[in-house]
Length: 394
Image 1 (cartoon, rainbow, N blue to C red):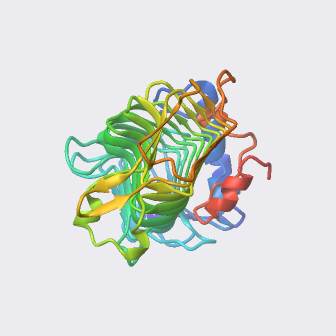
Image 2 (cartoon, rainbow, N blue to C red; image 1 turned 60 degrees about the horizontal axis):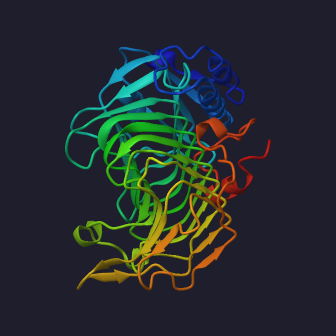
């Protein structure tokens, strides 16, 4: 593969030209506008590195071999085709100005990763300054905590500065995308998650300072389209469409046994979710309930379209923990009926309900609503800044 290594002298211009090719090999449930919006977002990825070293992988070659040799500033450009076998990104690290980028060079979904039955399709432990752009990721697991993406790290070295952008995540597994163990500064933007998940479409266990924007979640999930729990905080959900067949669309907080079979640092104790901002999202009528606050505080649900009810309840495990929900704001949402808020007894302390009403038109959300022109989503982009400026032109 070394003979295919190419060092570009100027700002990724050649890589951008490569991305002008047709999206041969794309397969999925997307419409034309969705595909075009995702492709425009993925095409920005090479601008994250001023002078990238580009390694091209073609069908029959090993993506894993390229990952194992990648250095900061490498773009692993994967040409159209099907690549069987899970990818292990463990220990892969770039730097904030020279991340490592994995790129589907033929267009969104042209490079297809088919995961192994006993591993996540794309897994990572102790990863930093890495981006994954434009792949079709197929999970095929029938048991275990395994699905599409599974990214974390030991508490001493959590995942940092990871961008998951413009991918199609499908198949069967536990979760479409799972982040845990203190993962921070994660950007999950413009992805289509359309599979059958044993638990969640997207699961966040002890995650902070992260952004989920303009994703579309369809298919089915036993529990939720997205969950943020186990001390998760400072997360923004903006412009997503959550319409999977599931019990709940969005869990701000949640329940689980992870607190009792892992050594949780004190920083992650005392609540399930805090300082979560959920704005501009659409929760369709497939989830049984639109939103649940579960052991959550200081969070806001504003300017969303919610087809179902909103619940507030504690995470209570007698003799182990009692995390109530309190001091959350529910403002300016379009709701199905005036009696949409259904708190458990005592789980509305400090809540603000204002400006919610029925009858307004559904807002556009998900990958089809990606702004044009889009901004580059780089691994080191500050999630908070990106959330505030994502819709502005560069």
